[in-house]
Image 1 (cartoon, rainbow, N blue to C red):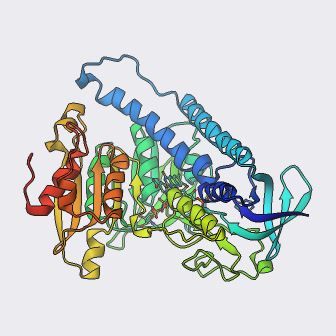
Image 2 (tube, rainbow, N blue to C red):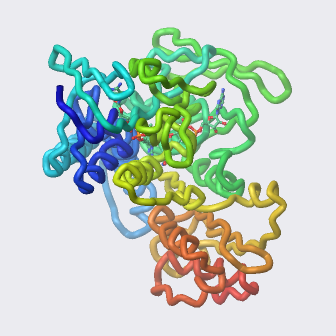
Length: 467
Ligand code: FAD
Ligand code: NAI
């Protein structure tokens, strides 16, 4: 039986990053993946393919809606959806092959098959190619990720009542896509199909889009997505979803308790994701999941069996690729005897719509609930020369700073390239900068980042220059 210092079960961003860091630290490492390609949800059916389609659909939208104003004329513009999906798949294939290359480069043994515990040190692999193999590890990392969630009232058939996985490979542009849940997946994939010409209707339990982010972001995002022709049904509850063959009928309870029905050709269920531990045989290792299906871990990401660790979507916290990656590195360095640290407050959160939404730190609602005294600095992109030059004027930067010390407590951006801009805020907050610190740093002109500086000037002493 092969012996390893570390066995990683699951090759998503958490698993493969952790495996590489283990190998870098001289630990003999194996990784097990049940699918034929590495990279997990993120690379195969999550972050990467969704961004590929977001980019393609944004190109089409710009070509059909904004190019003329830039003085660019196009005739006979059309969407070739099969080509769009093919390009997306090419991007995915290149990326997942890249991970396989990295495993080889770092001398990590890769096993394809379902991994399950035999005991707390032994893992059996039911190999994809057939047969079984058993390997043993001094340490084991569970990195098995998550799967889409649904409710009994909205049974998935994966043809018309679909999850994000199917929405990434549709063969036709929906006429009317009903989206249950206006969270991150709803906002991103709803944008893709709305830009390509679908009618999109959001049915959301809460009172806004992306309801767990700062409320200003949800309000502003709704305005932008409304411009794509979308409809919103907030505070509405889905009671029944039925595939009638060529259509989906969705019954919805309004805030007044009345029932309305909506008819579409596709219904995307994006109501969250649940941790995935099926087939792991956790009991054999002396482990169990909590009431929400998550594996419990302590501050060192150790389960109650200390040499078994867990990370990413299968444990508590944000279900984000870069959170899982930080945890992979954290576990590898802990196993190697180092004292790593993850600052969970400063894990940024990004929605890749256009304009993009990006945030780090506390929301205004969280500061209110905590009873913390804060001040707000807000600056709209439309006041920036760079934004007007590109016609990307929607959105704003909102900065929350401590009322007494001026320390940045939260930064929330909706606007062009917010996803990349948030890195400056993360860096500033990691070094515990004040709003005034940021406002005294030179920002290149003309750039979108000037909006961050100006918002900090507003927060410091209400002394924005360009507003
Ligand atoms: P996963 O990536 O889920 O990987 C787990 C792996 O374990 C899978 O490959 C699975 O097959 C394997 N596995 C499970 N059980 C076993 C077993 N018993 N044996 C062997 N292998 C097993 N996050 C972002 O940060 N940015 C984004 O832009 C973003 N976009 C997203 C878009 C979509 C449509 C979706 C669905 C998710 C998106 N996410 C995004 C979330 C991100 O994909 C997850 O947070 C991330 O993949 C979690 O990483 P992980 O390593 O915990 O698990
Ligand atoms: P989500 O948690 O972002 O949004 C789910 C939405 O559904 C919420 O707004 C919730 O109020 C609503 N909802 C829940 N039950 C409902 C019901 N019965 N009827 C109507 N609405 C209901 O989850 P989502 O969008 O499914 O994404 C799952 C996770 O994947 C995200 O939490 C995120 O961690 C990750 N992800 C990250 C992305 C990124 O970082 N850009 C992109 C896509 C996914």
